[in-house]
Amino acid sequence: AHYVESPQPEESGSLESTSDGAGQRREGHAAWGHAGILPVHYHHPVYFPGGRRQNRHNALEASARRHGVFHQRVGIEFAIASLKAGKGALIADDMGLGKSFQALSVIALNPSLKSVLILCPASLKYNWAAEVEKHYPSLSYVVIDGNAATRQQLWRRPSRLKIANYELLLHDVEPRVFEWDLVVGDECTRLKSWKAQTSKRAKKLRRRYSLGLSGAPIQNRLEEFHSIMDFVIPGLLGPGWQFVRDYCIKNYWGTVVGYQNLERFKAKVAPHFIRRLKKAVLPELPDKVYTDCNLELSSEEWRLYDAVRDQILTLIRSNDKLQVSNILTMMLRLKQIVDDSRLVGESIASSKMGALKEILEVAQEHKIVVFTQFAKLAIRLGVEYKTLVIHGGVASKDRVSIVERFNNDDGPRVLISTDAGAYGLNMTAADIIIHIEQPWNP
Image 1 (cartoon, rainbow, N blue to C red):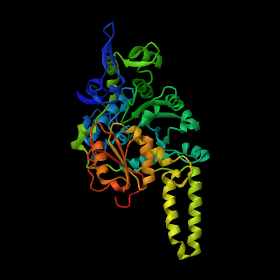
Image 2: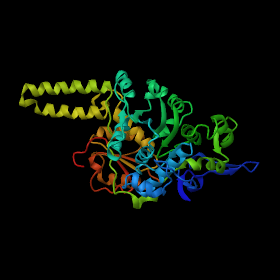
Image 3: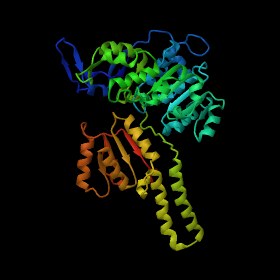
Image 4: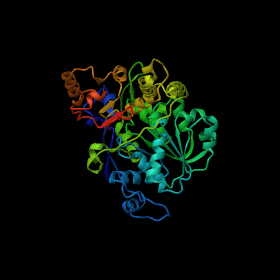
């Protein structure tokens, strides 16, 4: 048996467990945000392209990019085995362990998957395109982007992969009428709500198989995990009302206060769920993993950006040397507009801040340092996320105490900093760094 990590209350250290009059065990919410151990047994043969039964790891060594590390090959094999058995799978590896590579390998190793839809947050669409180009450039793909007319043409362009953000399920008819061999749900915690229209549309997609990817499949409540698994394998845990009846404990007012029958729950989920944490596969990992998050400004952001840019061009064409300082100031305004229009006194929703929120929600089990060039933005983010902030106005002795709080296991998991925190401070607890702007000195 290979052992993979999934939610288990006993390891969390925050389990609330009591018994009622009937001796029924009650297990509290807090435990379910943490990882435990579930055995997954590979007892069935795996068939690879060509219909021949092959040695599993040898086939993956030859076909799934030789640079794939062992835990990735195990994940690829696990997903292929699930699909061959007519089921979906959820790869819930920690952030940075190569879930997208594993998903693309599953597709590349199975030519029968001729029509694949990859759903992801809007900020990750072009990351997926880059992953395809990097690992499997022979896979044809189309990124669904642009206005409605453009998207309609892109949906109908021949390709093996279509890469789209979840929101398009609400606006475009094509993904709902096409028949898909596989639908990949990246960051599938987007589907955690039973009632959300995005979840309902995703679950109604006409597909043979589903593959879910998430670094944090259980964020708050076990009911959210049911909704995700209902996308991965429809009906596995029954309809919502049945799941609540079988696995949830309610108080007098109908509020879920705990969970029951967890061994039966885990037995149902285990064959379709695999999770590995960074600390478990650390020797296999590269020193650092770099990810570019490419974003598209909204039409409102573009209008504001273009207006300032036009002013800059007018000043440049005037050839007035006295305007140099004004030009440099206005160029800084362009960077601020791209970050968050509130920095220049506007109130347009920020694409970057939306992407940052998505990342922080997904990486809930990580310690994260967010760097920004602008102290005003750092302070604003510190207030919004109720977390630690370091900027030029913070005294040196206070910076040390802030970092000590952050490095403490029980301390806040996010630290917002300007370049003032980039030198001489040891943020050893951080395993993710986010640069809101391209740093001048990487």
